[in-house]
Image (cartoon, rainbow, N blue to C red; front, top):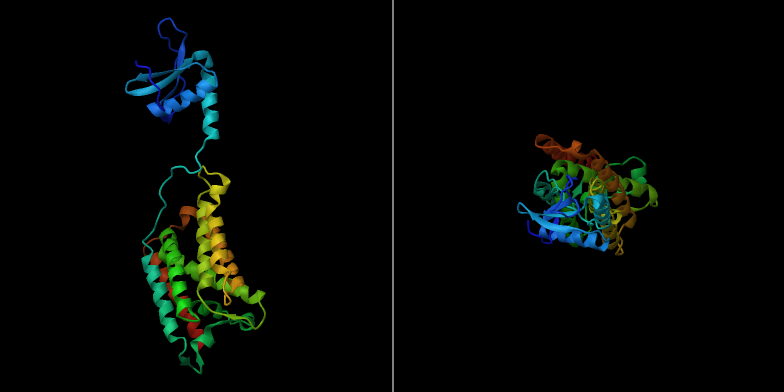
Length: 312
């Protein structure tokens, strides 16, 4: 055996006391690489525990007097607890599909409605028939909470929501599957518009997909936070997704004269609830193939039905 310092690996279980010639009986407490043993050797040296680092069958081991083995393990365990990494290795994020089909559908729908929204149908433009109107929604015109998500004030408003919504929607589609993701985004956005109609004055109106966009931020943040609860993370690290989403809400959703802040906040909160539910369900929400396709068709069906009711 050659005496050398070494590095990281895993502690070995207690072995039988060994002796080296006429020296005090010793016990192996750690087996690893050169660098790993070097780290624990420093810990033992600082604690005043005598040790030797030896080479054994291509590995490195630390041995200490048998009577001090338990104390040495306790010192090493205390060191490990105090120096846990903020991030630990874990399985890659599971993805169900590429997410691009949902983004493409979202973009095409918004573009089509934008091109059509000033056309007159049955005596009114799509814009007038589909925008949210707090008093009318309270009186039962629920479909406005859905149709308003596909209307936009101008081209810059449209492109901003296509870019932001498409990017965050891509991640949602990868995590949940495009069908479930976009069904959830539409319903959470509509729920946000419904809440907004009840908290704003009766004459309040609004349009835009941004309520659904912020619902998506909330949904992904809550889902990611719940799914991280089993990882060895500090509390600040565990809640990073929520903190980041709130920062984005404040940065993107609270500025500009035409910004409907209450709608953004309502959508975000609805998304949080949906994402938390999916996070708690975990692998039980894994849906593939035909079910995702049916959910995607259902999403288009809800939007189409809402517009049909609005125009007829």
